Length: 149
Image (cartoon, rainbow, N blue to C red):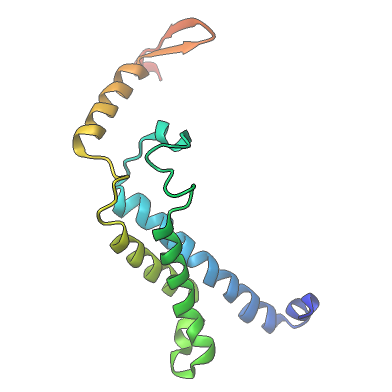
Protein backbone atom coordinates (compact mmCIF):
# COMPACT_ATOMS: atom_id res chain seq x y z
CA UNK A 1 0.00 0.00 0.00
CA UNK A 2 1.42 3.35 -1.01
CA UNK A 3 0.30 6.24 1.22
CA UNK A 4 0.27 8.69 -1.70
CA UNK A 5 -2.36 6.52 -3.37
CA UNK A 6 -4.88 7.72 -0.78
CA UNK A 7 -4.34 11.42 -1.53
CA UNK A 8 -3.51 11.08 -5.24
CA UNK A 9 -7.16 10.89 -6.21
CA UNK A 10 -9.64 13.08 -4.35
CA UNK A 11 -12.43 10.49 -4.62
CA UNK A 12 -10.14 7.88 -3.09
CA UNK A 13 -9.25 10.23 -0.26
CA UNK A 14 -12.82 11.13 0.57
CA UNK A 15 -14.52 7.80 0.15
CA UNK A 16 -11.85 5.37 1.33
CA UNK A 17 -9.60 7.08 3.85
CA UNK A 18 -12.12 9.35 5.55
CA UNK A 19 -14.82 6.68 5.61
CA UNK A 20 -12.38 4.23 7.18
CA UNK A 21 -11.37 6.87 9.70
CA UNK A 22 -15.03 7.44 10.53
CA UNK A 23 -15.56 3.70 10.89
CA UNK A 24 -13.01 3.77 13.70
CA UNK A 25 -14.14 7.00 15.37
CA UNK A 26 -17.89 6.30 15.31
CA UNK A 27 -17.69 3.33 17.68
CA UNK A 28 -15.37 5.23 20.02
CA UNK A 29 -17.85 8.11 20.11
CA UNK A 30 -20.74 5.70 20.66
CA UNK A 31 -19.04 4.11 23.66
CA UNK A 32 -18.13 7.49 25.18
CA UNK A 33 -21.65 8.88 24.72
CA UNK A 34 -23.35 5.72 26.01
CA UNK A 35 -21.01 5.54 29.00
CA UNK A 36 -21.49 9.14 30.12
CA UNK A 37 -25.16 9.72 29.31
CA UNK A 38 -26.84 6.32 29.60
CA UNK A 39 -24.68 3.98 31.69
CA UNK A 40 -23.43 6.41 34.35
CA UNK A 41 -26.22 8.97 33.87
CA UNK A 42 -23.68 11.84 34.08
CA UNK A 43 -22.44 10.71 37.50
CA UNK A 44 -18.72 10.17 38.00
CA UNK A 45 -16.65 9.87 41.16
CA UNK A 46 -13.88 12.21 40.02
CA UNK A 47 -11.40 11.17 42.70
CA UNK A 48 -11.76 7.54 41.57
CA UNK A 49 -10.64 8.41 38.03
CA UNK A 50 -7.07 8.95 39.26
CA UNK A 51 -6.68 5.86 41.45
CA UNK A 52 -4.92 2.84 39.95
CA UNK A 53 -7.11 0.53 42.03
CA UNK A 54 -10.21 2.72 41.93
CA UNK A 55 -13.73 2.13 40.76
CA UNK A 56 -12.81 2.72 37.09
CA UNK A 57 -9.53 0.75 36.90
CA UNK A 58 -11.11 -2.43 35.44
CA UNK A 59 -8.73 -5.24 34.41
CA UNK A 60 -5.22 -3.79 34.18
CA UNK A 61 -6.71 -0.47 33.08
CA UNK A 62 -8.86 -1.87 30.26
CA UNK A 63 -12.62 -2.20 30.26
CA UNK A 64 -13.00 -5.37 28.22
CA UNK A 65 -16.71 -4.73 27.69
CA UNK A 66 -15.87 -1.49 25.91
CA UNK A 67 -13.29 -3.28 23.76
CA UNK A 68 -15.89 -5.90 22.76
CA UNK A 69 -18.36 -3.14 21.90
CA UNK A 70 -15.65 -1.33 19.91
CA UNK A 71 -14.80 -4.42 17.86
CA UNK A 72 -18.46 -5.18 17.14
CA UNK A 73 -19.05 -1.53 16.20
CA UNK A 74 -16.14 -1.67 13.73
CA UNK A 75 -16.73 -5.12 12.23
CA UNK A 76 -20.41 -4.72 11.33
CA UNK A 77 -19.99 -1.59 9.14
CA UNK A 78 -16.85 -3.10 7.54
CA UNK A 79 -19.02 -5.99 6.32
CA UNK A 80 -20.46 -3.46 3.87
CA UNK A 81 -17.11 -3.44 2.05
CA UNK A 82 -17.36 -7.14 1.28
CA UNK A 83 -21.09 -7.78 0.99
CA UNK A 84 -22.69 -5.61 -1.71
CA UNK A 85 -26.17 -5.84 -0.18
CA UNK A 86 -24.77 -4.26 3.01
CA UNK A 87 -22.86 -1.44 1.30
CA UNK A 88 -25.10 1.11 3.04
CA UNK A 89 -23.40 0.10 6.31
CA UNK A 90 -19.99 1.11 4.98
CA UNK A 91 -21.28 4.28 3.34
CA UNK A 92 -22.62 5.39 6.74
CA UNK A 93 -19.96 3.71 8.85
CA UNK A 94 -19.64 6.48 11.44
CA UNK A 95 -23.37 6.56 12.17
CA UNK A 96 -23.85 2.80 12.28
CA UNK A 97 -20.67 2.32 14.30
CA UNK A 98 -21.82 4.91 16.82
CA UNK A 99 -25.28 3.36 17.21
CA UNK A 100 -24.14 -0.27 17.26
CA UNK A 101 -21.25 0.16 19.68
CA UNK A 102 -23.28 2.45 21.94
CA UNK A 103 -26.11 -0.07 22.17
CA UNK A 104 -23.77 -3.04 22.68
CA UNK A 105 -21.80 -1.16 25.35
CA UNK A 106 -24.97 -0.09 27.15
CA UNK A 107 -26.21 -3.68 27.14
CA UNK A 108 -22.90 -5.11 28.40
CA UNK A 109 -22.53 -2.51 31.16
CA UNK A 110 -26.08 -2.71 32.52
CA UNK A 111 -24.93 -4.36 35.79
CA UNK A 112 -21.54 -2.68 36.15
CA UNK A 113 -20.19 -2.22 39.70
CA UNK A 114 -18.55 1.03 38.58
CA UNK A 115 -21.87 2.89 38.56
CA UNK A 116 -22.67 5.18 41.47
CA UNK A 117 -25.74 4.56 43.58
CA UNK A 118 -28.13 7.38 44.42
CA UNK A 119 -26.82 7.48 48.01
CA UNK A 120 -23.15 7.67 46.96
CA UNK A 121 -23.86 10.44 44.48
CA UNK A 122 -25.96 12.40 46.98
CA UNK A 123 -23.22 12.20 49.62
CA UNK A 124 -20.60 13.36 47.10
CA UNK A 125 -22.66 16.31 45.94
CA UNK A 126 -23.30 17.40 49.54
CA UNK A 127 -19.54 17.28 50.18
CA UNK A 128 -18.85 19.22 46.99
CA UNK A 129 -21.44 21.89 47.82
CA UNK A 130 -19.91 22.48 51.24
CA UNK A 131 -16.38 22.48 49.79
CA UNK A 132 -17.25 24.98 47.07
CA UNK A 133 -17.97 27.74 49.59
CA UNK A 134 -14.46 27.59 51.06
CA UNK A 135 -11.48 27.29 48.76
CA UNK A 136 -7.98 26.54 50.00
CA UNK A 137 -5.12 28.12 48.09
CA UNK A 138 -1.46 27.81 49.22
CA UNK A 139 -2.40 27.49 52.88
CA UNK A 140 -4.64 30.57 52.81
CA UNK A 141 -8.37 30.12 53.17
CA UNK A 142 -10.35 32.22 50.74
CA UNK A 143 -14.06 32.63 51.35
CA UNK A 144 -16.00 32.86 48.14
CA UNK A 145 -19.32 34.60 47.85
CA UNK A 146 -21.60 32.40 45.66
CA UNK A 147 -23.50 35.44 44.41
CA UNK A 148 -20.36 37.15 43.06
CA UNK A 149 -18.86 34.11 41.36
